[in-house]
Length: 426
Image (cartoon, rainbow, N blue to C red; front, side):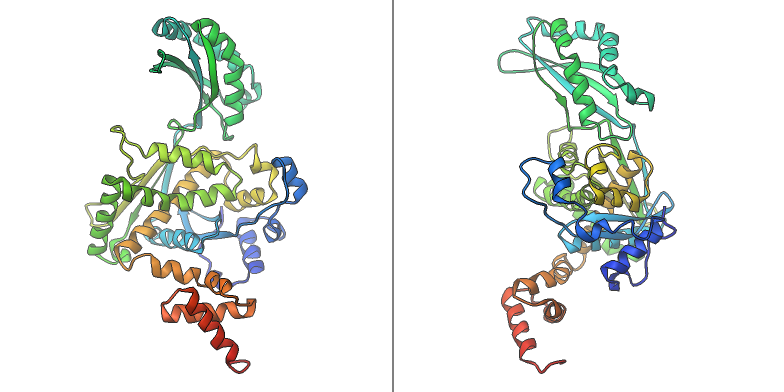
């Protein structure tokens, strides 16, 4: 990984200088990140990746700094149109860095596929028949992807449930598969389809669905950090951040926004690295539903015995380094090079650490001055552009809005008019 992730003056560099700096720190070739300069995707590439293509759409890719994960520094690429997301992740990481940064861990990269059987006359007995044929079905599934077994993956188990339906119980078999460094959707879907006919025969019914579940609750990644109370702003800030978390833990209305903030960071890294944002988001939000069926906070915040704040986050993280856009999109390959991760588990842990950094920064802002001033200060350039500012005017209009603390379209227009009336150079 990079020797350090705190880069003095990084915000003042132009985009080319930032690319060169990140490439040097990540140990890539000087031109290794040039795909970010053009969006990294030609229309010809897009034709291969999608259907009915008419072009491409770009998003800004920035780099979060200050990240320390398991004692090592790392730079994190994030694809997002919202400037405050990258700023917040960097700020949260800076706070966590004081007492050692983030510690992370993961379970095995397990994905599951479901095979749904309907019209079984005896669903509970059908369940047992499928379990009796467990070894046969696992062998049939494993035969679909011998390469996966060669790298240490493959089917780990077959479980079977009965699920109530409107016209009788369904029999639902789950293939439990270690997918190694892949996200795994294609692998487990192929396996499910391959064993579907035999499952139907054994169960005495018809198979309808044979597809993965995005509730990847066997593929968890975790991050934690201890936050220095003095750095946060003192005991009252610690107390108020716990209050802010507690509302998210108990009130679904607050939890939805609290978790959205976490996903601001997570989705930006997942997107930058060419992984499936929808799968990750579906898994995360399903994980936020507790055993009582209530939607709650994904993260936790507690005061420790020393008076510092501990922050933790655990959620499904089905991301991969092989397959899909992670290999076909040049910018995704460049983003992965920046992270310097070697395994899908390392990437998953880094993603979760960024989500927690984002959450730390948001709760700290909410417990102190609120989020809007910082967010709108970063958004000021967008307001200036919307008001009609030319490139050489954007910075001056944004500065005027920040000075006034008035982030409105009419104030941007007034500031722009003042700038244009002023003598040249003033």
